[in-house]
Image 1: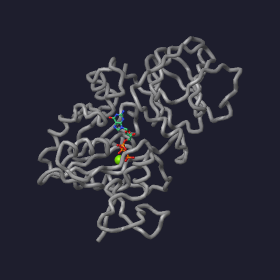
Image 2 (image 1 turned 45 degrees about the horizontal axis):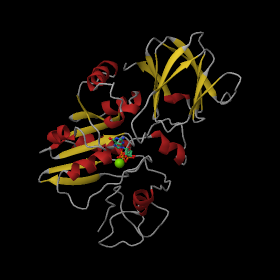
Image 3 (image 1 turned 60 degrees about the vertical axis):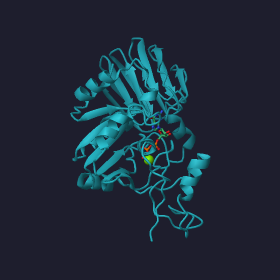
Image 4 (image 1 turned 30 degrees about the vertical axis):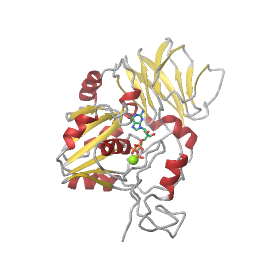
Length: 330
Ligand SMILES: Nc1nc2c(ncn2[C@@H]2O[C@H](COP(=O)(O)OP(=O)(O)OP(=O)(O)O)[C@@H](O)[C@H]2O)c(=O)[nH]1
Ligand SMILES: [Mg+2]
């Protein structure tokens, strides 16, 4: 009989330690694969080549979902995420997760209006914190009595954390899906029956086409996900001054005005201000972009910058495709 890991959904096997699903002893008691065991107990990831599941997830959801719950995290709202949401044809809800890290000054109603105008979202939007469990009753009301509710979204948006929270409200024994700040934790569909005729299904997260890191840069990857409340930092950026984040990218003010420049990124990431006499990262690819009044500059998978003034910025980065501008939320 095929047995699946209850943490990540892959088929368990005891023949090849280097492959997915490995467990030393494969018997009736085996629950988690070695990778999940290490993630859960030591927060330690083995880097694996994850099979891309994007098309498989979208196909299955479009064919089988009675309801699709698409989860995004507040720091990662961008065109790629919204395009993926738009590919879902079934009845769907958008959930903005990680409300616990959002500064209180940013009201849900404001985010909602902005999602409707900037990203043309027409569907219902719910705001919650999967980690804290706040506002999840609204979602539970939606899924109760629905035969197949699929949870989908980009990796690390908090799908599995949310399913675990929902399960804790029902009497589902021995099911604890693995969660972690490392991308691609969930590797296959995980179907959990929460009551008669009602199942919730976790799915492997989508990955960004362009990223600022390699899969083995675990120290950097762990810092991207804010562990606690987000404290945005504002810099008054003089002409020719730059902000450098973790030696990954440099954003330089190439206008002749001083800019108000507020970073909404994890506070674990190292930020420094440099002047043009310091040539750090000047060797990377660069691109100059014009920022209109009150635009945000999005850094996909990292967060965004709010810039109050119209200006020109020069960006230095290994991957310029992760930067895009949008009308600001503020
Ligand atoms: N602050 C905060 N962190 C959260 C919340 N939900 C999830 N996280 C964290 O985000 C990270 C990713 O959570 P997962 O539940 O593993 O994300 P996922 O969407 O299942 O990711 P994949 O399985 O890779 O697709 C973990 O470190 C979680 O603790 C939340 O509501 N607030
Ligand atoms: Mg997951």
